[in-house]
Length: 477
Image: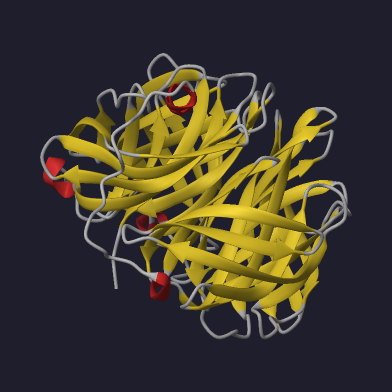
Protein backbone atom coordinates (compact mmCIF):
# COMPACT_ATOMS: atom_id res chain seq x y z
CA UNK A 1 0.00 0.00 0.00
CA UNK A 2 1.08 3.61 -0.35
CA UNK A 3 1.38 3.69 3.45
CA UNK A 4 3.97 0.92 3.37
CA UNK A 5 5.81 2.66 0.55
CA UNK A 6 6.15 5.95 2.44
CA UNK A 7 7.27 4.23 5.63
CA UNK A 8 9.87 2.27 3.64
CA UNK A 9 11.18 5.49 2.18
CA UNK A 10 11.25 7.11 5.61
CA UNK A 11 13.32 4.22 7.02
CA UNK A 12 16.08 4.83 4.50
CA UNK A 13 15.41 2.16 1.87
CA UNK A 14 15.96 3.27 -1.71
CA UNK A 15 13.53 2.56 -4.52
CA UNK A 16 14.67 2.52 -8.15
CA UNK A 17 14.79 6.04 -9.55
CA UNK A 18 11.69 7.11 -11.49
CA UNK A 19 11.88 6.20 -15.15
CA UNK A 20 12.74 9.29 -17.18
CA UNK A 21 11.12 8.95 -20.61
CA UNK A 22 11.92 11.21 -23.48
CA UNK A 23 10.56 14.70 -22.96
CA UNK A 24 6.89 14.79 -23.88
CA UNK A 25 5.76 17.86 -21.91
CA UNK A 26 7.08 21.28 -20.94
CA UNK A 27 5.94 24.55 -19.34
CA UNK A 28 4.19 25.35 -22.61
CA UNK A 29 1.91 22.32 -22.08
CA UNK A 30 0.00 24.55 -19.63
CA UNK A 31 -0.90 27.70 -21.55
CA UNK A 32 -4.09 29.78 -21.58
CA UNK A 33 -7.30 29.85 -19.55
CA UNK A 34 -8.23 26.96 -17.20
CA UNK A 35 -11.00 26.18 -14.71
CA UNK A 36 -10.04 24.02 -11.71
CA UNK A 37 -11.56 22.32 -8.68
CA UNK A 38 -10.09 20.68 -5.57
CA UNK A 39 -11.50 18.82 -2.61
CA UNK A 40 -10.20 16.86 0.34
CA UNK A 41 -9.40 17.02 4.05
CA UNK A 42 -7.83 19.56 6.41
CA UNK A 43 -5.72 18.21 9.30
CA UNK A 44 -5.23 19.38 12.87
CA UNK A 45 -8.79 20.49 13.64
CA UNK A 46 -10.26 20.05 17.15
CA UNK A 47 -12.14 16.91 16.04
CA UNK A 48 -9.18 15.63 13.99
CA UNK A 49 -9.98 16.61 10.42
CA UNK A 50 -12.58 18.26 8.24
CA UNK A 51 -13.49 18.68 4.59
CA UNK A 52 -12.79 21.47 2.13
CA UNK A 53 -13.74 22.27 -1.46
CA UNK A 54 -12.64 25.02 -3.78
CA UNK A 55 -12.91 26.08 -7.40
CA UNK A 56 -11.48 28.83 -9.54
CA UNK A 57 -9.94 29.83 -12.83
CA UNK A 58 -6.45 30.86 -13.85
CA UNK A 59 -4.41 31.97 -16.83
CA UNK A 60 -1.12 30.11 -17.38
CA UNK A 61 1.49 32.03 -19.35
CA UNK A 62 3.26 28.93 -20.70
CA UNK A 63 6.45 30.04 -18.89
CA UNK A 64 5.66 29.08 -15.28
CA UNK A 65 3.42 31.96 -14.15
CA UNK A 66 -0.25 31.95 -13.07
CA UNK A 67 -2.89 34.56 -12.26
CA UNK A 68 -6.55 33.96 -11.45
CA UNK A 69 -9.42 33.86 -8.96
CA UNK A 70 -10.40 31.31 -6.30
CA UNK A 71 -13.36 30.38 -4.07
CA UNK A 72 -12.69 28.24 -0.98
CA UNK A 73 -14.90 26.78 1.75
CA UNK A 74 -14.17 24.60 4.76
CA UNK A 75 -17.52 25.11 6.45
CA UNK A 76 -17.18 28.68 7.67
CA UNK A 77 -17.71 31.63 5.33
CA UNK A 78 -16.74 31.35 1.68
CA UNK A 79 -13.33 32.95 1.02
CA UNK A 80 -13.05 34.49 -2.44
CA UNK A 81 -10.39 36.57 -4.14
CA UNK A 82 -7.58 36.80 -6.62
CA UNK A 83 -4.57 34.50 -6.72
CA UNK A 84 -1.12 34.34 -8.22
CA UNK A 85 1.17 31.37 -8.61
CA UNK A 86 3.92 29.49 -10.36
CA UNK A 87 4.33 26.00 -11.80
CA UNK A 88 6.90 23.51 -13.08
CA UNK A 89 6.42 20.65 -15.55
CA UNK A 90 8.85 17.78 -16.17
CA UNK A 91 9.18 15.84 -19.40
CA UNK A 92 6.88 13.02 -18.21
CA UNK A 93 4.16 15.48 -17.16
CA UNK A 94 4.81 15.45 -13.40
CA UNK A 95 5.25 18.86 -11.85
CA UNK A 96 4.42 21.29 -9.09
CA UNK A 97 2.19 24.31 -8.58
CA UNK A 98 2.36 26.96 -5.85
CA UNK A 99 -0.68 29.20 -5.37
CA UNK A 100 -0.88 32.35 -3.25
CA UNK A 101 -4.55 32.66 -2.30
CA UNK A 102 -6.47 35.02 0.00
CA UNK A 103 -5.10 34.35 3.49
CA UNK A 104 -3.10 31.24 2.63
CA UNK A 105 -0.63 29.59 0.29
CA UNK A 106 -0.91 26.02 -0.98
CA UNK A 107 1.38 23.57 -2.74
CA UNK A 108 0.16 21.18 -5.40
CA UNK A 109 1.66 18.29 -7.32
CA UNK A 110 0.39 17.89 -10.85
CA UNK A 111 0.31 15.44 -13.73
CA UNK A 112 -0.40 16.55 -17.28
CA UNK A 113 -2.98 14.50 -19.17
CA UNK A 114 -2.99 16.76 -22.21
CA UNK A 115 -2.78 20.44 -23.09
CA UNK A 116 -6.44 20.66 -22.09
CA UNK A 117 -6.38 18.75 -18.80
CA UNK A 118 -4.17 18.27 -15.73
CA UNK A 119 -4.60 16.28 -12.53
CA UNK A 120 -3.93 18.10 -9.24
CA UNK A 121 -2.97 16.89 -5.75
CA UNK A 122 -2.59 19.11 -2.69
CA UNK A 123 0.58 18.13 -0.82
CA UNK A 124 0.58 20.51 2.16
CA UNK A 125 1.30 19.45 5.75
CA UNK A 126 -2.14 20.80 6.77
CA UNK A 127 -4.32 19.41 3.95
CA UNK A 128 -4.62 16.74 1.27
CA UNK A 129 -7.00 16.84 -1.66
CA UNK A 130 -7.21 16.15 -5.36
CA UNK A 131 -8.94 17.49 -8.42
CA UNK A 132 -8.13 18.79 -11.84
CA UNK A 133 -8.03 21.67 -14.26
CA UNK A 134 -9.55 21.88 -17.73
CA UNK A 135 -8.91 24.31 -20.55
CA UNK A 136 -11.60 26.99 -20.33
CA UNK A 137 -13.43 28.37 -23.33
CA UNK A 138 -14.58 31.98 -23.53
CA UNK A 139 -17.44 32.68 -21.08
CA UNK A 140 -20.86 31.88 -22.53
CA UNK A 141 -24.42 32.82 -21.63
CA UNK A 142 -26.04 29.91 -19.81
CA UNK A 143 -29.40 28.85 -21.20
CA UNK A 144 -31.51 25.71 -21.25
CA UNK A 145 -31.35 22.53 -19.17
CA UNK A 146 -28.32 21.21 -17.24
CA UNK A 147 -28.15 17.84 -15.49
CA UNK A 148 -26.33 18.17 -12.16
CA UNK A 149 -24.82 16.37 -9.20
CA UNK A 150 -24.32 18.04 -5.79
CA UNK A 151 -22.62 16.85 -2.61
CA UNK A 152 -22.93 18.74 0.70
CA UNK A 153 -21.75 18.10 4.26
CA UNK A 154 -23.07 20.15 7.17
CA UNK A 155 -20.12 20.69 9.53
CA UNK A 156 -20.80 18.59 12.61
CA UNK A 157 -23.93 17.16 10.98
CA UNK A 158 -25.20 15.09 8.06
CA UNK A 159 -24.11 14.71 4.46
CA UNK A 160 -26.46 14.82 1.48
CA UNK A 161 -26.32 14.27 -2.25
CA UNK A 162 -28.62 15.43 -5.02
CA UNK A 163 -29.05 14.87 -8.74
CA UNK A 164 -31.47 16.57 -11.08
CA UNK A 165 -31.80 19.21 -13.74
CA UNK A 166 -31.61 23.00 -13.71
CA UNK A 167 -33.43 24.96 -16.41
CA UNK A 168 -31.93 28.41 -16.99
CA UNK A 169 -33.92 31.24 -18.59
CA UNK A 170 -31.99 34.50 -18.43
CA UNK A 171 -31.36 34.95 -14.70
CA UNK A 172 -34.24 32.70 -13.56
CA UNK A 173 -34.03 29.01 -12.64
CA UNK A 174 -36.57 26.22 -12.34
CA UNK A 175 -35.81 22.56 -11.84
CA UNK A 176 -36.26 19.12 -10.34
CA UNK A 177 -34.06 17.12 -7.99
CA UNK A 178 -33.73 13.88 -6.07
CA UNK A 179 -32.05 14.24 -2.68
CA UNK A 180 -30.57 11.56 -0.40
CA UNK A 181 -29.28 11.53 3.14
CA UNK A 182 -28.38 8.43 5.13
CA UNK A 183 -31.64 6.52 5.47
CA UNK A 184 -33.85 9.02 3.61
CA UNK A 185 -34.63 9.98 0.02
CA UNK A 186 -37.00 12.57 -1.43
CA UNK A 187 -37.88 14.36 -4.67
CA UNK A 188 -38.43 18.10 -5.03
CA UNK A 189 -38.97 20.97 -7.40
CA UNK A 190 -37.13 24.26 -6.98
CA UNK A 191 -36.87 27.78 -8.28
CA UNK A 192 -33.97 30.19 -8.11
CA UNK A 193 -31.86 32.94 -9.57
CA UNK A 194 -28.53 33.04 -11.35
CA UNK A 195 -25.91 35.58 -12.34
CA UNK A 196 -24.46 34.97 -15.78
CA UNK A 197 -20.69 34.25 -15.87
CA UNK A 198 -18.18 37.10 -15.75
CA UNK A 199 -14.91 37.32 -17.68
CA UNK A 200 -13.41 34.60 -15.43
CA UNK A 201 -16.32 32.27 -16.19
CA UNK A 202 -17.56 32.75 -12.60
CA UNK A 203 -21.20 33.17 -11.58
CA UNK A 204 -23.51 32.51 -8.64
CA UNK A 205 -26.87 30.82 -8.17
CA UNK A 206 -29.47 30.46 -5.45
CA UNK A 207 -31.92 27.52 -5.24
CA UNK A 208 -35.10 27.35 -3.13
CA UNK A 209 -36.91 24.02 -3.03
CA UNK A 210 -40.59 23.27 -2.40
CA UNK A 211 -39.98 22.69 1.34
CA UNK A 212 -38.40 26.13 1.85
CA UNK A 213 -34.77 24.97 1.95
CA UNK A 214 -32.31 27.38 0.33
CA UNK A 215 -28.82 26.68 -1.02
CA UNK A 216 -26.24 28.91 -2.65
CA UNK A 217 -23.37 28.14 -5.01
CA UNK A 218 -20.54 29.71 -6.93
CA UNK A 219 -20.02 28.14 -10.34
CA UNK A 220 -17.28 28.22 -12.96
CA UNK A 221 -17.83 27.57 -16.66
CA UNK A 222 -15.43 25.04 -18.16
CA UNK A 223 -16.99 25.22 -21.62
CA UNK A 224 -20.42 25.78 -23.12
CA UNK A 225 -21.57 22.38 -21.78
CA UNK A 226 -19.82 21.89 -18.42
CA UNK A 227 -19.85 23.63 -15.01
CA UNK A 228 -18.07 23.24 -11.66
CA UNK A 229 -19.89 24.23 -8.43
CA UNK A 230 -18.74 25.04 -4.89
CA UNK A 231 -21.25 25.53 -2.04
CA UNK A 232 -21.14 29.04 -0.56
CA UNK A 233 -23.45 28.71 2.50
CA UNK A 234 -21.77 29.12 5.93
CA UNK A 235 -21.61 25.89 7.91
CA UNK A 236 -21.76 23.66 4.83
CA UNK A 237 -18.99 22.22 2.66
CA UNK A 238 -20.04 21.15 -0.81
CA UNK A 239 -19.31 20.87 -4.51
CA UNK A 240 -20.93 19.75 -7.72
CA UNK A 241 -20.86 19.30 -11.47
CA UNK A 242 -23.26 20.25 -14.25
CA UNK A 243 -23.52 19.17 -17.89
CA UNK A 244 -25.80 20.66 -20.55
CA UNK A 245 -28.74 18.37 -21.27
CA UNK A 246 -29.31 17.34 -24.90
CA UNK A 247 -31.38 14.68 -26.63
CA UNK A 248 -34.72 15.20 -24.87
CA UNK A 249 -37.34 13.81 -24.80
CA UNK A 250 -35.66 10.75 -23.29
CA UNK A 251 -36.85 7.13 -23.35
CA UNK A 252 -35.58 3.73 -22.18
CA UNK A 253 -33.61 3.62 -25.44
CA UNK A 254 -31.51 6.50 -24.10
CA UNK A 255 -29.73 3.93 -21.89
CA UNK A 256 -28.40 1.06 -23.94
CA UNK A 257 -25.18 -0.88 -24.53
CA UNK A 258 -22.31 -0.76 -22.02
CA UNK A 259 -21.86 1.85 -19.27
CA UNK A 260 -19.07 2.33 -16.75
CA UNK A 261 -20.01 3.88 -13.42
CA UNK A 262 -18.64 5.14 -10.15
CA UNK A 263 -20.19 6.11 -6.81
CA UNK A 264 -18.48 7.72 -3.84
CA UNK A 265 -19.63 9.13 -0.54
CA UNK A 266 -19.90 8.89 3.22
CA UNK A 267 -21.00 6.11 5.56
CA UNK A 268 -22.40 6.24 9.06
CA UNK A 269 -18.84 5.68 10.33
CA UNK A 270 -16.59 7.68 8.02
CA UNK A 271 -16.53 10.64 5.69
CA UNK A 272 -15.29 9.27 2.39
CA UNK A 273 -15.91 5.73 3.64
CA UNK A 274 -17.42 4.35 0.41
CA UNK A 275 -16.28 3.83 -3.16
CA UNK A 276 -17.94 1.77 -5.89
CA UNK A 277 -16.93 1.26 -9.53
CA UNK A 278 -18.38 -1.08 -12.12
CA UNK A 279 -19.93 -1.65 -15.51
CA UNK A 280 -23.24 -2.90 -16.87
CA UNK A 281 -24.97 -3.63 -20.17
CA UNK A 282 -28.49 -2.31 -20.86
CA UNK A 283 -30.78 -3.45 -23.67
CA UNK A 284 -32.48 -0.11 -24.35
CA UNK A 285 -35.83 -1.63 -23.30
CA UNK A 286 -35.63 -1.29 -19.51
CA UNK A 287 -33.42 -4.27 -18.63
CA UNK A 288 -29.88 -4.42 -17.31
CA UNK A 289 -28.82 -7.77 -18.67
CA UNK A 290 -25.46 -8.07 -16.91
CA UNK A 291 -23.28 -6.07 -14.60
CA UNK A 292 -20.26 -6.20 -12.30
CA UNK A 293 -19.16 -3.93 -9.46
CA UNK A 294 -16.34 -3.65 -6.95
CA UNK A 295 -16.82 -1.71 -3.73
CA UNK A 296 -14.93 -0.60 -0.65
CA UNK A 297 -17.20 0.22 2.29
CA UNK A 298 -15.53 1.12 5.59
CA UNK A 299 -12.46 -0.82 4.45
CA UNK A 300 -14.30 -4.00 3.41
CA UNK A 301 -13.92 -5.20 -0.20
CA UNK A 302 -16.72 -6.73 -2.29
CA UNK A 303 -17.04 -7.94 -5.88
CA UNK A 304 -20.55 -8.67 -7.15
CA UNK A 305 -22.35 -9.45 -10.39
CA UNK A 306 -25.88 -8.12 -10.89
CA UNK A 307 -28.83 -7.66 -13.20
CA UNK A 308 -31.64 -5.14 -13.00
CA UNK A 309 -34.35 -2.99 -14.51
CA UNK A 310 -34.69 0.71 -15.26
CA UNK A 311 -37.27 3.22 -16.46
CA UNK A 312 -36.52 6.61 -18.08
CA UNK A 313 -39.06 9.45 -18.30
CA UNK A 314 -39.10 12.20 -20.90
CA UNK A 315 -37.18 14.64 -18.62
CA UNK A 316 -34.20 12.28 -18.39
CA UNK A 317 -34.97 10.98 -14.90
CA UNK A 318 -34.25 7.25 -14.63
CA UNK A 319 -35.14 4.92 -11.78
CA UNK A 320 -32.93 1.84 -11.53
CA UNK A 321 -33.21 -1.34 -9.47
CA UNK A 322 -30.12 -3.56 -9.31
CA UNK A 323 -30.25 -7.10 -7.93
CA UNK A 324 -27.25 -9.18 -6.91
CA UNK A 325 -27.29 -12.75 -5.63
CA UNK A 326 -26.74 -12.80 -1.87
CA UNK A 327 -26.82 -9.00 -1.51
CA UNK A 328 -29.47 -6.39 -0.80
CA UNK A 329 -31.06 -4.79 -3.88
CA UNK A 330 -29.83 -1.33 -4.82
CA UNK A 331 -32.34 1.33 -5.85
CA UNK A 332 -30.84 4.30 -7.68
CA UNK A 333 -31.99 7.47 -9.41
CA UNK A 334 -30.15 8.95 -12.40
CA UNK A 335 -30.59 12.13 -14.40
CA UNK A 336 -29.33 11.95 -17.97
CA UNK A 337 -27.33 14.74 -19.57
CA UNK A 338 -27.54 12.80 -22.83
CA UNK A 339 -27.40 9.20 -24.04
CA UNK A 340 -23.70 8.94 -23.08
CA UNK A 341 -23.58 10.54 -19.62
CA UNK A 342 -25.66 10.76 -16.45
CA UNK A 343 -25.36 11.61 -12.75
CA UNK A 344 -26.86 9.23 -10.18
CA UNK A 345 -27.38 8.58 -6.49
CA UNK A 346 -28.11 5.33 -4.61
CA UNK A 347 -30.03 6.09 -1.39
CA UNK A 348 -29.25 3.63 1.43
CA UNK A 349 -29.69 3.12 5.17
CA UNK A 350 -25.97 3.26 5.95
CA UNK A 351 -24.44 5.60 3.36
CA UNK A 352 -24.95 8.62 1.13
CA UNK A 353 -23.49 8.38 -2.37
CA UNK A 354 -23.36 10.10 -5.74
CA UNK A 355 -21.52 9.53 -8.97
CA UNK A 356 -21.63 9.28 -12.73
CA UNK A 357 -22.56 6.91 -15.54
CA UNK A 358 -20.53 7.02 -18.77
CA UNK A 359 -21.12 5.15 -22.03
CA UNK A 360 -18.32 2.68 -22.74
CA UNK A 361 -16.45 3.09 -26.02
CA UNK A 362 -14.36 0.48 -27.82
CA UNK A 363 -15.39 -2.77 -26.10
CA UNK A 364 -15.13 -5.70 -25.84
CA UNK A 365 -11.79 -5.14 -24.16
CA UNK A 366 -8.55 -7.11 -23.86
CA UNK A 367 -5.04 -6.58 -22.51
CA UNK A 368 -4.13 -4.69 -25.69
CA UNK A 369 -6.81 -2.08 -24.85
CA UNK A 370 -4.34 -0.61 -22.33
CA UNK A 371 -1.16 0.48 -24.05
CA UNK A 372 0.94 3.57 -23.31
CA UNK A 373 1.54 6.17 -20.59
CA UNK A 374 -1.50 6.96 -18.45
CA UNK A 375 -1.75 9.91 -16.08
CA UNK A 376 -3.52 9.03 -12.83
CA UNK A 377 -4.78 10.60 -9.62
CA UNK A 378 -6.14 9.03 -6.45
CA UNK A 379 -7.31 10.08 -3.00
CA UNK A 380 -8.68 8.38 0.06
CA UNK A 381 -7.92 7.02 3.50
CA UNK A 382 -5.21 4.50 4.31
CA UNK A 383 -6.39 2.68 7.41
CA UNK A 384 -9.12 3.68 9.82
CA UNK A 385 -7.13 6.19 11.90
CA UNK A 386 -7.78 7.76 9.34
CA UNK A 387 -4.64 8.73 7.43
CA UNK A 388 -5.31 10.68 4.25
CA UNK A 389 -3.41 9.49 1.19
CA UNK A 390 -3.27 10.90 -2.33
CA UNK A 391 -1.09 10.51 -5.40
CA UNK A 392 -0.64 11.74 -8.95
CA UNK A 393 1.71 10.37 -11.56
CA UNK A 394 2.25 8.16 -14.59
CA UNK A 395 1.67 4.44 -14.97
CA UNK A 396 2.59 2.57 -18.13
CA UNK A 397 0.70 -0.40 -19.59
CA UNK A 398 2.53 -2.49 -22.20
CA UNK A 399 -0.56 -3.77 -24.05
CA UNK A 400 0.15 -7.31 -22.89
CA UNK A 401 0.52 -8.18 -19.17
CA UNK A 402 2.73 -5.59 -17.46
CA UNK A 403 1.93 -2.33 -15.65
CA UNK A 404 4.59 -0.04 -14.19
CA UNK A 405 4.24 2.97 -11.89
CA UNK A 406 6.99 4.88 -13.65
CA UNK A 407 6.82 8.17 -11.70
CA UNK A 408 4.41 9.33 -9.00
CA UNK A 409 4.12 11.79 -6.13
CA UNK A 410 2.53 10.65 -2.86
CA UNK A 411 1.01 12.78 -0.09
CA UNK A 412 0.44 10.77 3.08
CA UNK A 413 -0.68 12.46 6.28
CA UNK A 414 1.08 15.67 5.31
CA UNK A 415 4.33 14.04 4.13
CA UNK A 416 5.36 14.09 0.47
CA UNK A 417 7.59 11.73 -1.53
CA UNK A 418 8.30 11.12 -5.22
CA UNK A 419 8.78 7.52 -6.29
CA UNK A 420 8.81 5.24 -9.29
CA UNK A 421 10.05 2.08 -10.93
CA UNK A 422 7.60 -0.37 -9.33
CA UNK A 423 5.15 -2.55 -11.24
CA UNK A 424 3.21 -5.76 -11.62
CA UNK A 425 0.95 -7.69 -13.98
CA UNK A 426 -2.61 -7.07 -15.18
CA UNK A 427 -5.51 -8.88 -16.83
CA UNK A 428 -8.53 -7.44 -18.67
CA UNK A 429 -12.05 -8.88 -18.95
CA UNK A 430 -14.25 -8.23 -22.01
CA UNK A 431 -16.51 -5.93 -19.93
CA UNK A 432 -13.55 -3.64 -19.15
CA UNK A 433 -12.76 -4.90 -15.65
CA UNK A 434 -9.00 -4.77 -15.11
CA UNK A 435 -7.22 -6.48 -12.21
CA UNK A 436 -3.55 -5.97 -11.38
CA UNK A 437 -1.41 -8.28 -9.34
CA UNK A 438 0.54 -7.02 -6.33
CA UNK A 439 2.61 -3.88 -6.99
CA UNK A 440 5.41 -3.87 -4.45
CA UNK A 441 5.04 -1.14 -1.84
CA UNK A 442 1.97 0.34 -3.53
CA UNK A 443 -1.06 -1.96 -3.47
CA UNK A 444 -2.08 -5.60 -3.11
CA UNK A 445 -4.23 -5.14 -6.21
CA UNK A 446 -5.81 -2.38 -8.23
CA UNK A 447 -9.25 -2.74 -9.86
CA UNK A 448 -10.10 -0.63 -12.91
CA UNK A 449 -13.18 -0.36 -15.12
CA UNK A 450 -12.50 1.01 -18.58
CA UNK A 451 -14.68 3.76 -20.02
CA UNK A 452 -12.58 3.42 -23.16
CA UNK A 453 -9.02 2.38 -23.99
CA UNK A 454 -7.99 5.91 -22.93
CA UNK A 455 -9.75 6.28 -19.55
CA UNK A 456 -10.88 4.33 -16.49
CA UNK A 457 -12.05 4.57 -12.89
CA UNK A 458 -10.16 2.55 -10.28
CA UNK A 459 -9.99 1.41 -6.64
CA UNK A 460 -7.06 0.13 -4.60
CA UNK A 461 -8.14 -3.30 -3.36
CA UNK A 462 -6.42 -3.17 0.02
CA UNK A 463 -8.50 -4.17 3.06
CA UNK A 464 -8.84 -1.37 5.59
CA UNK A 465 -8.48 1.41 3.03
CA UNK A 466 -10.84 3.55 0.95
CA UNK A 467 -8.80 4.86 -1.98
CA UNK A 468 -10.25 5.62 -5.42
CA UNK A 469 -9.15 7.46 -8.53
CA UNK A 470 -9.16 7.83 -12.29
CA UNK A 471 -6.67 7.50 -15.12
CA UNK A 472 -6.40 8.84 -18.67
CA UNK A 473 -4.05 8.17 -21.55
CA UNK A 474 -1.60 11.03 -21.90
CA UNK A 475 -1.78 13.06 -25.08
CA UNK A 476 1.38 15.18 -25.42
CA UNK A 477 1.33 18.27 -27.60
